[in-house]
Length: 198
Ligand code: ZN
Image 1 (cartoon, rainbow, N blue to C red):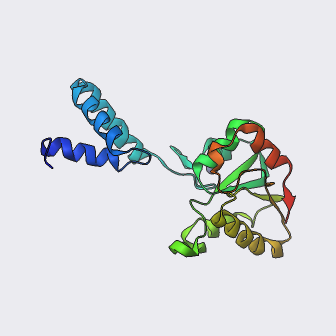
Image 2 (image 1 turned 30 degrees about the horizontal axis):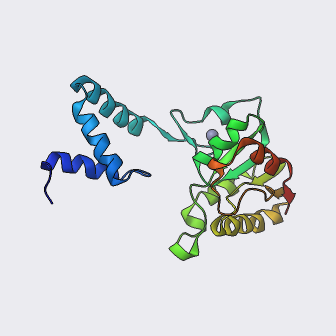
């Protein structure tokens, strides 16, 4: 149904392709954008473009950053011998928010999922193994407690075991299938403190 002009439809379509944005919200956002002053829309469009052009992966931990090395990896006060492995940047942000974790991170950008054809080579696993050639005391696996997260944790621990580096898994208590980002800080800290050596 061609209720609106082509340009409006296109805008609604783009917006509704964003995560968590349904058709109704996309429509509301599109009308809102159309009614904004032109300079405001230009600034918004420029911000998106500049973020896309300037933000890249940290060369060490693969979180997003403006620099070659992210502020966490560049911070000398942090414990560089402890690496926490997380599935995505949102999980890293959740642990950072607790303010209690002093080590550094490694972002996998996904989890192993044979069901949808994501194998070990499709996530930043080789990059993690490369980091373990340096002096590392412990790798804390903080992947989600979903099937994919558990599969990934098992796979990683089997890879690391022969190196003699301590491998631990955050304690359950994190709800099964629950995305780490939605879990409160107390639960996250408890999961971290109660981690079990694999
Ligand atoms: Zn980093």
